[in-house]
Length: 263
Length: 357
Ligand SMILES: Nc1ncnc2c1ncn2[C@@H]1O[C@H](COP(=O)(O)OP(=O)(O)OP(=O)(O)O)[C@@H](O)[C@H]1O
Ligand SMILES: [Mg+2]
Image (cartoon, rainbow over all chains, first blue to last red; front, side, top):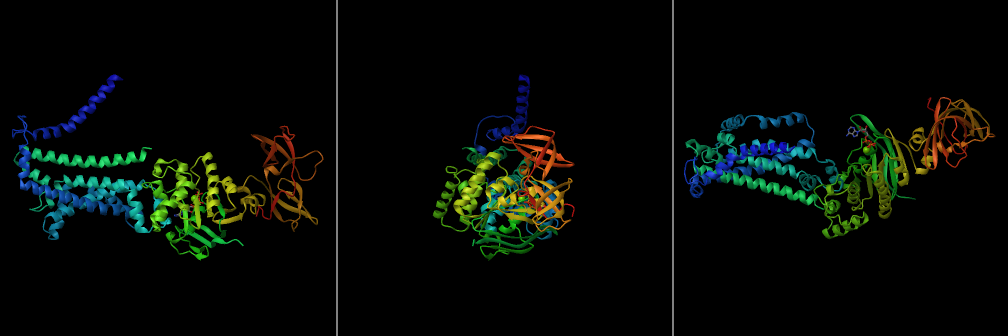
């Protein structure tokens, strides 16, 4: 029994080591005085300083934030309403659309990227922040719909009738009852959309224009000439941002759970 | 003359061509506790939903307090529903749930607060105002669902098997509580159940529904003592039913022959010789017969004795027909292979219809 337990712990340790060792290495080397990612020679904040005086990077950061915030907001809005509509109304081809939703989720991103690009070229649109945002919205919507739908399927749909029965009109029923009731699904859909948008390279690569580089694209460009410590610093910052978002989102959930189950 | 609060006039409802409600007309009086009772799938929920407006009627008219509401949408009807699964808003506290209807009607905040407080006292849930529905027991959720309806002081409250998910003890307790609240508020209740004990103990009148039509609507007592159809006799309480045919009639007495080859004498009700009847005898209407009794006697071969406290239920056979009767435990009775029973022709019910039709 005892040996079993040790084996189990060792296994878990190895899995975590495998997952986190690269990330830890990266963070450590971002403070390295030597520009080569081989030996840790001394502690410095030099690379972070360099980062903040690098205007291309700062522009990329700004673009990333704009693209991910706007695309998250829009895709969450559209995706939520679509999920509600797909649940509520019956129409010809509904089943087909429901299945179709999984296509963008499973097809290779590169295919999606190329097809978006060819649409833009066909429409003679100039590639830029606009096309980038539209692309991110497009690939995020299915994820939002799927995550909202999971929650809708597990809620008691009679609450809608109850709301009508108690005098709420359609709009009030939606805003005061349905949306709050499926909020957990909306939040997880939005988190998913945000993280997908934040670190997307492939689709952005095809649909971004000259002035609309995002951070992942910029990093991708920088490592063509070898991994430099400022890339380490940059990715460390990105990890920090994503960790913060995740921690906040799980803190909200934990607080909600506490409020509901503590008597 | 009592005021009619809800009037159904030949209401029909089809689903995809299938007739579910087949023409129901019904007057429900102000402050009445009316129960719709019937087997599963007979259309109780559907009928209730046509009254709340959640379901449109296929034809017929519905009036609430004299006003034709047939084409009025649910939120404009002064009716509230207590759903079978409560349908509470899980993201709202108890207080918010109860106040929702008033908020939608734009009642001032301060008034909402006092009215919600009043009903919370009424349902005896003080101290639970800030809980979410998931933190409540089944019985408590039930009471919140009830409060969410009655706080609006609707003209009619529709309740769809509200107690069916509760255990026996809680159900009995809630039955008393529901009745108390209904009396106190004076709201008209239309209550759906398929539990006959519940229906009989709580209602002013009960409508027995079968297959989309009302078989009989009466006080619980009348339903039991004077069922108008075989279905009602069977559905309410236990009954022994016999096909019978009129053999001869004297002035105020008729001799009829039961399917078990037994002639009995009953009161003549303008019967014709040869007319087919159904005789209904409740298990407790049988008495032990003494030697000297000759008319209206059964000789029963007993099969099984089911002891039940103050009485024993006995299953037996007369010829090929299974019958059921009750022996009170202080009766002078010893378990026997064969027992002679009598009944009074004043008690039993005779229907002028017959299974052999
Ligand atoms: N939306 C619907 N579409 C088609 N048929 C329906 C629909 N709703 C109900 N029915 C049918 O109508 C009949 C009556 O249903 P209803 O729910 O009124 O029964 P009920 O008397 O309430 O039964 P229970 O006691 O089981 O709740 C059933 O045969 C059911 O299958
Ligand atoms: Mg029902």
